[in-house]
Length: 328
Image 1 (cartoon, helix red, strand yellow):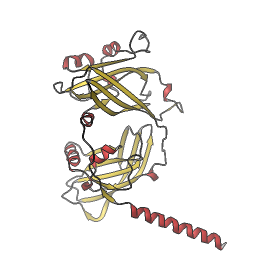
Image 2 (cartoon, helix red, strand yellow; image 1 turned 60 degrees about the vertical axis):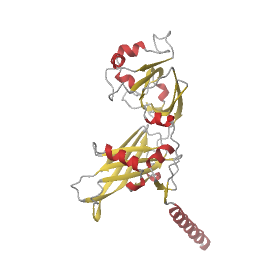
Image 3 (spheres, helix red, strand yellow; image 1 turned 120 degrees about the horizontal axis):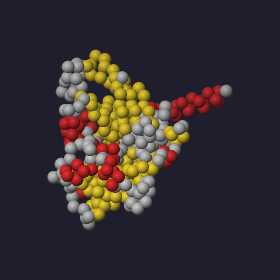
Image 4 (tube, helix red, strand yellow; image 1 turned 135 degrees about the horizontal axis):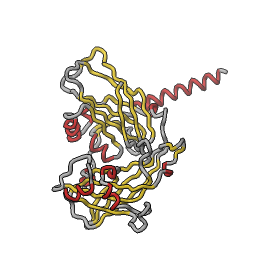
């Protein structure tokens, strides 16, 4: 019996030592800005991908660009690329668009093809797309895209492929350049893990220091907060990480983990400083839902020189199409 107690006691001591060692090893370190800015990187940063552009198009334009193997499209090509460089062609194609386009400096690259419907009947997503890379080589525009499959349950079964094939169009809003050919490469990624009910234990929230951020990134955030009260950003690759942070914890691994950055413009008339904690966090079907508790710090007033709260939420790497943050 004594031996059992001794074994348990030793295991507890070892566990405590491990916790202390991990805590001691985690520290804030400088992050060198070792990115080599290239023309490809600059181009990618100026491109916006719209994977549901067909919703804003005129019916006759969609029909004119139908692709096989859609019904009544046997003689049509399997994919069609259109480049819109002026307002006249845009008006022929679209009823509306989410943003204004300056055709003196910008153009739209449209790629039509037949794919599985990305929306369910209640407008939740089976799939979503992200731009991976874009480059121009010898007047050839090469676009690389990730297509993520979410874990949306259809009739209680994870079967997104059961959706009916439909007309799809990816739209790339980008700087106006001269190209003679286009090539689109889609890499399919499967992610069916839901993390439902268990993600909170794998997540850490930092009431962070704005001085962790690089000056240019902080300026962009401050400018955006002039017209809104809160802003959310995701850090999911090394380039995004290095561009945003000049300091962070040395134990962070961008290959296995991601960061959600949450910026809040505080009320200048509110004299209190607040601390935030995670109430709940859920991931399902590409949607990341984070619920935070907000509590006034005891006997501590707000630093009047800084009216922006900066939170960092560190969690496992997830293909999160949509991040929603709610404060209780």
